[in-house]
Picture (cartoon, rainbow, N blue to C red):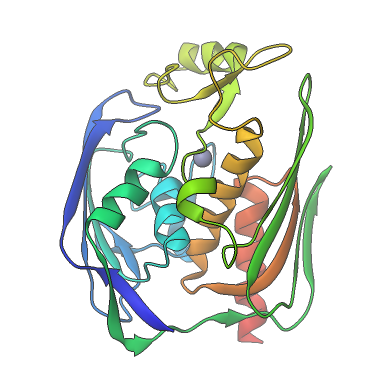
Length: 261
Ligand SMILES: [Zn+2]
């Protein structure tokens, strides 16, 4: 399989989730081997400055939905330029980025794609959260989450059989109303609204879900975005239970550390 970029630049505008301020992102073709850069900074784990609520690179927060879209669509090389402190939240999913990348025409480049091939099992844990990777000739993820009032949601995603664009990209970020109010009091989530998040009530969704199990799909979307920080597509089978950005990025760090030894 060869590396891919996009045929022409494409741009998106919108407000940021936390700042509530307008920002613009331009995604442009990049040469083979360049990887994904954000304002000139490679989108790899060693350049992540925060994973608190969102993944931040080069002073730009909430890069994970764009990275998820690129990884999910098999785009290896991309030059991303952002004005503002965070990427636009759009509809809270990776769909606006995925659609923009599709419109910009993914193209193959004259260089072979280099994969990270996992050789041994790696598991990272924290409290009730777990993320395990085992060697596998391909890529697939099983994700389980559990929320009060919603019970358990489990999803298996295998991109060789299922479409990232249809099954994962449209899943929106989610939260509880009480959390959004507390965040707003701290000056965060100022851009959050029913238009860019799925809201969980005490015993059901407050607004219309896009899938009955939309939250687990978004967790998987975020995991794929965090895996992009490896800098190479991963060949492995993953099992995640209640994992989030912190554990996801810890797995990426462990994978890279093992690669060096
Ligand atoms: Zn997310």
